[in-house]
Picture 1: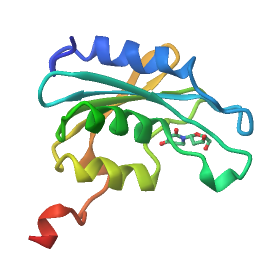
Picture 2 (picture 1 turned 60 degrees about the horizontal axis):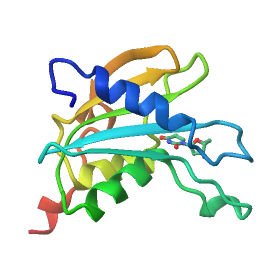
Picture 3 (picture 1 turned 120 degrees about the horizontal axis):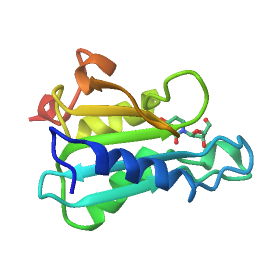
Picture 4 (picture 1 turned 90 degrees about the vertical axis):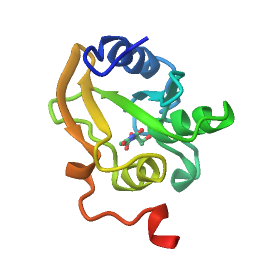
Length: 135
Ligand code: THU
């Protein structure tokens, strides 16, 4: 089980999840692994579709697994993809993460070789709109 001081298990789970990706159109596999606040580890991959906009991201799959297991708080997440550029969560996934986390969420950006950079959700999505806005 990964903890905040040592994200290695989370990083490895995200990298392993890349192998599960269904990405025949982009040929760009992405894996995500998140730890719920209850300690559960949830993984996901991108799942594309012949009707392109219907595909979804790895982070989205991992969030769905977490919610299905009854957890509604993300403690930490790792995302893995290849290429030289950092594979940060897309704009839509930043907002999806925000639904279950705050600015201090730790986001580990990984390549196939391991951890590349660690940022917070607040850095990726500053001045965000979230559930608290509606209360
Ligand atoms: N992708 C993700 O899974 N997560 C991201 O945050 C960035 C993009 C996927 C979506 C699509 O299947 C492929 O990467 C290329 O955009």
